[in-house]
Length: 348
Image 1 (tube, rainbow, N blue to C red):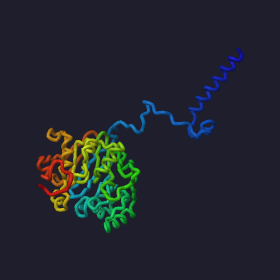
Image 2 (cartoon, rainbow, N blue to C red):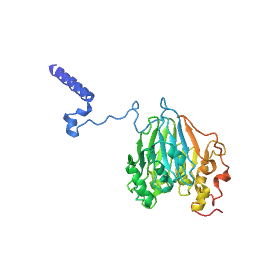
Image 3 (cartoon, rainbow, N blue to C red):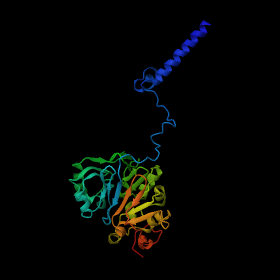
């Protein structure tokens, strides 16, 4: 009888010790856990504690205003001006010098994101020298050969807070929104040295249940890599990659984004002069293949046909400015080559 009581007492003491052990501070483990590694293994996530990598769509944060996105009409180039719900300003690319002068000279830019180091995306930085807070770019990871312009740009980033984006990452520009950088060059193969477009930083901005994706000049190798890595590209708005080039906007990429609004920053006349012939029917065909354009549930606009493209999110829905009216299909396709063409060439 005494042995049974003693055994029971020992069992109670052991159970009590185990409870105290697991309730104690995990950073001060000794004994067995200290011997095997210094800390107790992390507890498994339970349904009551959602995994931080599986977030449900967020509700609109309190005391936040509107998110304003304007794709500026800067010709055959890119410049997107964003006013966040908390009053911060973001410029994604700066176009060619002189095109966005009125905006860039008069605005304080809190954050400048150069998607990649081509002239039609960064040349307008010359207006930003006194008005920019911090700069984000790919750090010239591909060894871009842009001569004097790139040398001048490097001097610009050396005199400002500068971040070279080396992998997918999240940044806090405004607590009201989520800003993510998505890149294809943070993979084992490194950066593309022969095509700077593939080194584009894609920017995804989420506000409440709405999201915007800005694709820079990401071409098919970049798109394919992102898709293969399972990158979350879902967005209601897509700034179409590479001015609507046939080397971008593959059908799989367009489907993965699944946007309602599409914006192309382009100038057909300049594009013809330069021999690009943007936008190509190949990319437009993939976009229109999503359906819903004739029914008015999807919309595509071009800066050369519509001017500045303005979109506003209240955290629940995205709406376009009232002046934006959809061009006809004939205008959208511009008569360039055949619907399945992916090579550059003259207008038929």
